Length: 294
Image 1: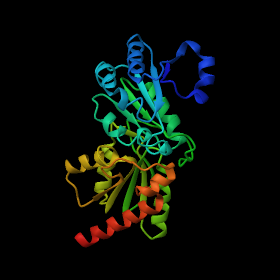
Image 2 (image 1 turned 180 degrees about the horizontal axis):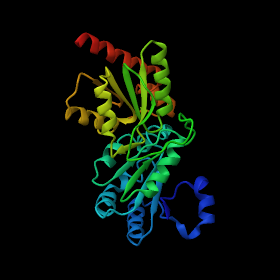
Image 3 (image 1 turned 90 degrees about the vertical axis):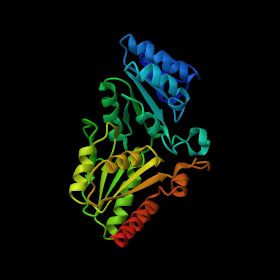
């Protein structure tokens, strides 16, 4: 079943016509949408809810927590427009805390694919996942970074490039920007690697263990999201509980603030330090600070 909160008509019309008994428009009533989805799931349906940004998540958080997660209902919450994708519509449409909030819910699987190939794989994985899950998408138009569809298994991080000095970790639709930042670092003589994190919860701790064993100078997390509680927060928690051999952490994201500026996605990425040149500059500065500290 696909249940929409009165959005997505240009995308969903063909599906609704082809599968009329598997499609429902719940109206602009996201709490009801989630409650209906849980009821359908508890009767044996595999249900996807769909809306923009914060609407299918923050607006109906109590229903997601108490109804879906607590009962391990097969509800797949789909957010279109993660991060600054709807930047011109203002803060109500800027999804910049959603990963932290969804990740905190017990039993919630969190997918944040980075490109169209990962999105296809994550959609299949969400369908097959037991219990409730969150699928955070961009707005469309993201560039493929992978050359073919990856296999998502057990929440593992996908390594796109090795690097001896620094490893960039990216989650969500900013993967192409992270890849460009890596290219700029390589041009500066910094041996930078890149990993994509299409599954934030459960988190691939083994990947970070390997980075620590190889004594990376720096791990830099990149996300179109607050640095609190998302990918940066996840890695910080892990490092705080692990015997660290000197690897430092740089969190690139929205720094404990609302994205109150209005503008398109590229403009907001530039403003909040998430363009490729600004990410590369932040990595270089962090590595220099680390050299002085040592």
